[in-house]
Length: 309
Image (cartoon, rainbow, N blue to C red; front, side, top):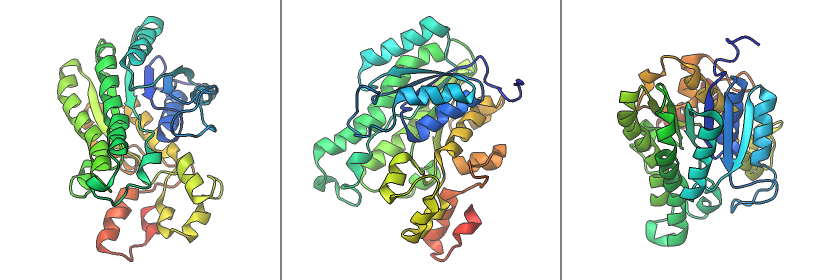
């Protein structure tokens, strides 16, 4: 395999929150580009997190990274526990001596949002609302605070804050409820702030959003699989613009392999935009633009979804 096919050979990445969905796909695609990827999460073959899914584990993610051509290392970690994150970073330092890519993808709050969307702040259980902020904001802050001293030891590090929505979209629209809105806007602002702080060490920080993601949980919600996902469009036609996790995985891998990625510093990006920039496609060869479609439909209810795939 040539260096052209493995542009991240010798690079060390940490994907925080890599059990399933976007995090898993990002880890695998970084591995496919040759990186060594530490993958973390709370669901292992011996323990299940509050998400309640037993079908995906961090060990499996690590195996997929290795099968893709990289080296996957699974480290069970609760990113709300600073001492666990500290032990993780110390292990990476001890074993590799560097960290080149940090992907903050920790979330795991899907089980909290179904009954809260569209509700007013005072109608949502306070514990549930605050848990969203713990999972989507506090975890990212703990991880960045702990890992960035290692990442900045060498110039050119990359931080990717994974969220739901771009600054252009979220900045002018209310996202479902106050707690969710805060949880998904905070990573955008984190990337903006970290971009300022990393600039003098040659680092880059961005936020990246997938579009309508066909995660394992989303497929289960619609009662379909990745092989027959189009059957779900019979109930929700707009699902035709959805994308597989591979798409955002390729987006982050392309960013990490770009020697000129500093041009994106501080920006809010999405998989569709990065696909147009770097020329990659989703797993099925299409190039969906979920956010473009969602925005267009707000002014034209009859917009053709095929024009955005």
